[in-house]
Image (cartoon, rainbow, N blue to C red; front, side):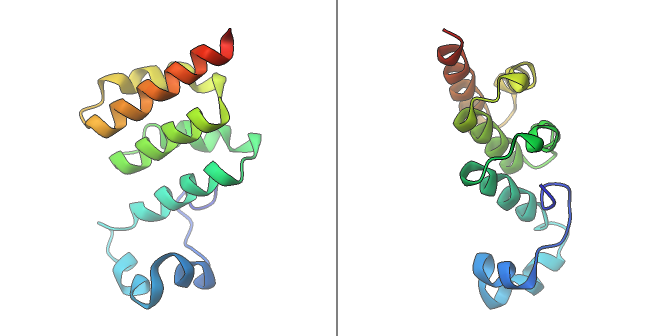
Length: 113
């Protein structure tokens, strides 16, 4: 959740995620969105319901990869509270975001039955 909020990554985790090149690579603001992607990706495997507000914010992130990963989190954990936000992503300009949003909505619809 901290990564999704823009916090820096722990040096050990930086090494795990991005090897010795990541410190310089992540200094560029162009690449820093990857931290938010990694934070969302972590929620795929380690879910905590307290993350719902962070995922809601990520669904509106300026970086399409963050939006895509957040939609995948919603799908994986069937976060029904975020259905209206995900529904807005079916018109996203990026096809991968639209696909992730559509899949999430389909899984949420099945879970509602």
